Image (cartoon, rainbow, N blue to C red; front, side, top):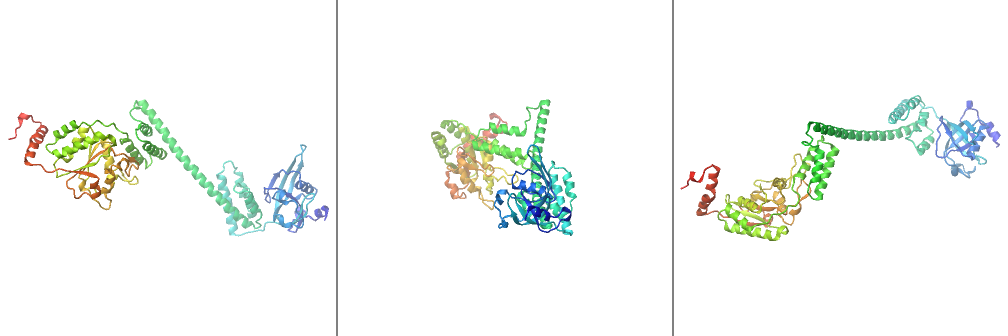
Amino acid sequence: MSEQTMHDEQPVEEERTTEERVLPLVVLGEMVIMPRIPVPLQVGKGKSYRAMERAMEGDREVLLIFVSESEIEGYKGSEPQQLPQVGVIAKLEEFLKLPDDTVRIILEGMERAEISECIQSEPFYMVRCTPRPDTEVEGANIDALVSEVKSQVEEIISFMPEVSQEAVAFVQRIDHPGHLADIVAYGPAFDFEDRLELLNMLDPEERLQKVQMELSQQLELLRLRAKIQSDTKDALDQSQKEYFLREQMKAIRRELGEDDLDEDPIDELKRKIAELTAPDYVKEAATHELKRLIQQGLSSPEAGVIRTYIDWLLSLPWSKEEQQPISLTEAKNVLDEDHYGLEKVKERLLEYLAVRKLAGTKMRSPILCLVGPPGVGKTSLGKSIARSLGRAFVRASLGGVRDEAEIRGHRRTYIGAMPGRIVQSIKTAKSNQPVFILDEIDKLGADYRGDPTSALLEVLDPEQNSTFSDHYLEIPFDLSQVIFIATANQLDPIPGPLRDRMEIIELGGYTEDEKLEIAKGFLVPKQREFHGLQTEQMTVT
């Protein structure tokens, strides 16, 4: 069949039918031109270029397919199955050869067409195809789908300030479902593969449903992105607001001459952490919590909990202290001055101090447990040891304690959480090597809240207490240099594992003569001093 004959068989625009036609083939690579959409083109001088030159001699119509020319090289009439199934019949609106040897081309898609076979490959491709215009579809479902797609397009464009509102008005004027789907397919939500899939959908309703699903996914992403940006902006605005308010407060304080009296809380905490003498892991924990405080802001509900924790870290004595030399003579004088009798007990205490003097910090000292009836001077012996060593003295009464958290502290997840009595007493002493009296250790009890005796095992074990972990602090605290002295009225109630960790020193009751000497040498002078009396003002017969 000659080219002239093929041209004569092509119907004119006014008489378009769905009868089979023969058209020159233009191959456009990875771009899709939908029906009823004009597109400017640049085409290299090859078969597609010659096909358009041929079309300009006739009715200017070509068939567009969207693959690369290399994919269809060597097509023969016997291999029609290698061609795409669907192409687009398009009209050459402009094919202008310019003086600079370039060509200005404008193509407008007209309708889809099913390709049946390739009938010519040189000097350009000619293919046989059947037009497939969109069928008319009506009904409530179609109207609802058209309305939904238009609403989605309007919302998507609202996220894109660079897109003109004229685009919304243009889309709103389109009522044909197939045309609406083709127009929307040019939006950023669709890539080449999506457009090619839509091109191959000959049913307008199916095509519009596909577009609606793609737009729904795109909208979800845009909404999520907008929410993330909004949340980030709000957080930044709040942070900036707090920064400016703090700067204004500083300026006001400077004007009032109070700049040295009150410091910004965040800056104050930063300075204290920098000045803290403590192991690295303590500073890291404090810095980590400070970052959390800065991120959440001072007005956050958690800010109080975080600040309390940082204050505890800053107030505990972490640094190693220089131990004062132990004088056994001074210790003996103090013990004799404060206590009458108890010679065997004093002798054992002096032996204990002598060993500490020889061993220094290397000593894993045993835990002394003073057992005896009430009032024989167990607690006051501990005070005397502290005075003779020049150390701080703290006392924790364990009578009636039944909650393990009293010893080891509460987790910070609980409202009103605090460290246990051990850490609290260390903070009170402001020293990490005080003399620590654990009073009435035989009165400990256990119930559903746990067994405090188990927690004391770690405290009183010289091999473990160098890394004592309080549940509130959650970082190790060194108790190895603390001198623990326990007191008890009876030995039997103390559990075996706890008793094994202590050296028992029993104190008996006093004889009548000892009681008389204690009254004359200690009690009467003390009472006279308490009542403001001179020696000659009171006589005891």
